[in-house]
Length: 390
Ligand code: NAD
Ligand code: MG
Image (cartoon, rainbow, N blue to C red):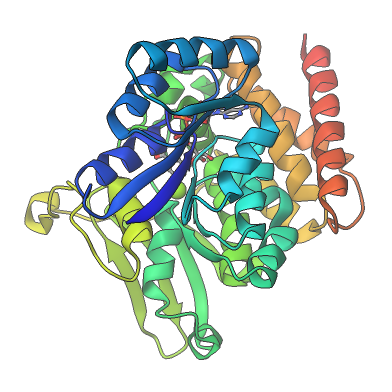
């Protein structure tokens, strides 16, 4: 039995992961499940999957979860807080860790999994954006296996056979596809009126609210450019973004000889999750087979950078390097939260990130402490910028 910890088990990725595991109960056992606040939902999953451990955000949530589990006769050990998250991500009871917490909150436990030499299934792109070199060094030094779950990076991983440097030497560029989100063709003059629900109504994917807003601004693709840089060692000039509204081609690798390899499939995160769980084998994932005749036309276009300023800001942060990507991510998290809370306009997100980046901390991201300090400083700067918007 392969034992799995799911960080962020109540989220969109967490649920899809449990769905794939449910189909293969002969092969996978759940070691630990974590959630921040959704206690009832976590309890239901604990009752079904019987993990050894469960972690929630607060002592109060832990008491509530414990009560629900005792009533159901489930012996899962309950704990709470960041140290407990790091513990379930690194303890001897788990083989693989699905890193599916949203945002910077996932950094420490995901890094703990890498430092414990686990097989890390990485959905939490923000962790890698913040700490790229530190994270990749930890994977190498501790013999962890890193499997990208983000659909684009999973596609690129599938198109870059084996971890053999000879393949990488022949790569001309990696091409990240993007759906363009719900506002790809909307009149830019009307973008300031968008509500959180409109921004979260993604045309092709059902996801958590933060990543849905990021998809609408295309900051998600910007974060993915930085993620691709670290995962595949690609410099910014060799990373291209292409809008592909049908979300069938999940990304591509172009080689020097003119070959382009792509991975295709219906837009369903259970495909990359199943690939990560079973790698290098393939298992059934519950995804409906791709019918290209039904899909009809597959189209591609270059993104309009003026419509999606967040994409340009992410490329800028990658070129500056050092602590700039951590500042970009932190400013974006604060701005997106403020937008979801109805405090700022959709178009203010890019303005706030740009303001924070102008004064981005100089310096190298050579320690976790430096990264977390840059994250805190950028959050403060973003909150100050929010205040000035009125
Ligand atoms: P979600 O909002 O649906 O779920 C987030 C999970 O993280 C929940 O289980 C929640 O309890 C937990 N969480 C939130 N804040 C926390 C905190 N402070 N401490 C501990 N746990 C916390 O998000 P999602 O859509 O599942 O995305 C999860 C991650 O996967 C994100 O980094 C996202 O960018 C990435 N991702 C998601 C998709 C997708 O299709 N949903 C695709 C690619 C990548
Ligand atoms: Mg993606």
